[in-house]
Length: 117
Image (cartoon, rainbow, N blue to C red; front, side, top):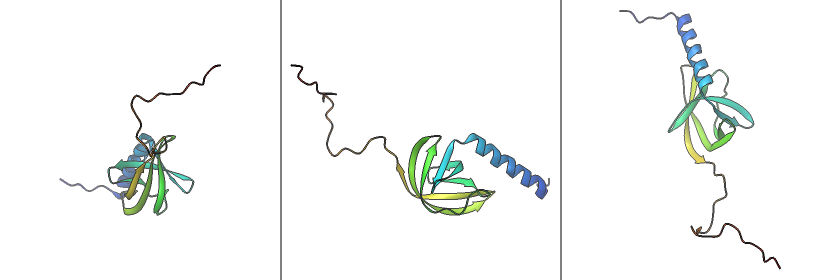
């Protein structure tokens, strides 16, 4: 059995696969104010379309729609199958509130009421 596929057919299959990944993913990468669609993400990295993305490196922000998820330090790892794969050197989750420098009591009052005299 032959597994040979003509180059034109393989290119069409790769374009269709990348288009499907772009539609399915809500993840976006913000690098210096420019947004790129993230095709796939895994524990140690992610991939973006090689045709639209430059060779990125350094600090970037990762979003899920409008929700800021992570601040990342990235390096390019490899280019394969129309994707550039990046690895995280550092991945920090974005917090919704500043870090506390004291222990919060579980039974602490929510607010203090002023004396109404």
